[in-house]
Length: 423
Image 1 (cartoon, rainbow, N blue to C red):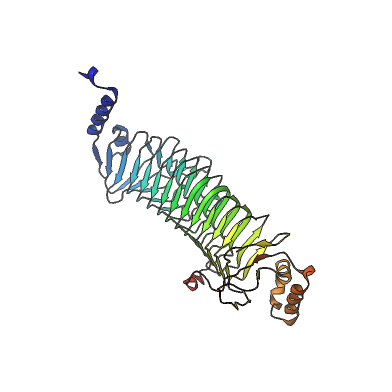
Image 2 (tube, rainbow, N blue to C red):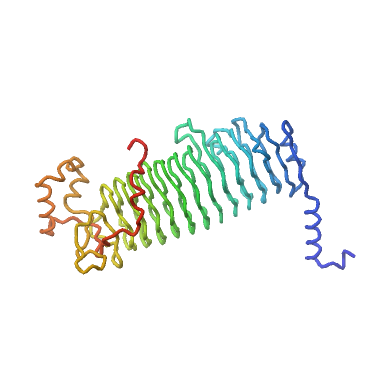
């Protein structure tokens, strides 16, 4: 009879039998969780009752670990608390804590080893681990709705990262709250990922991208870090609808970035709103840059970019530009600059004279910050006027030929005063 069944049908029947044999096992308080995992069959569900379990767990087969009333798994401050080497593992509803603290061994609360494809980690608390989640060569993972905190009494260089991705494809990182780690999200050589709805705060960088392409970064908050979002040595990124505020250095760093879209973000109350270095062929559109010490720090030949429809409001310095020639922004529809002093006689919503971000006085204050004390003096105002009248004294600048008279963000005032504590 079996010989008469087609090969594909036989495989389907065998898979059905395997599914039918899957079981739900329960580990009660005080039970041996490691023994239960070792005895389970592929596809089983292990339900873990509320309690504290001292374990360094190896999951080497497809299983679901499901916490009932949030049990705690403690690694005893050594090794990985949970190590996953199998594909198709689901971990949910657990408190996972107390990994080791060896940066050399990359100890983690949950370490997804190469080949742990399609892993799911959701609704877990990962606390007092060196690395919260280390994901290495594991594709199509889903990490969502987790609370991740590090060993907060450690100095920043001694901590691990909240979630670290290395050499992965198609990761989905959704709605996680990550703090008190080195970098909340560290992404290296990982492509086609989606990062959405995460809260990243009180760390060195909210997120740190390197050598990763075709990723989407959307609707995330990065705040009270040293740096918010750092994209370095990357291309083909979409960064839209995020909020980077109250970071002690930059809100969004774009360094050696190409062929990307940076749109509709709010960058508020940082020391530098945007830090743009060696960036070409990007679209920087529709962003609100407000109440930063420097709105945009632009240097290193960052050119051939489309910069339209942004609002630059109440930054102490709108643009700090380092370049040998003028850089034109807003060539098509213009940007809004809150310190624009021109006029709009024809009422078309655009200024009649171009906006220049930096003049000779701005350059002087870059080199000698003490000059700012004299900005309102007649001598400095006369110097600014002379610089405009005599082009030989004019400094290269960001020039917007069609500045907008009104901001596009009607709620801009809500983002004032979002500074780093103590600033």
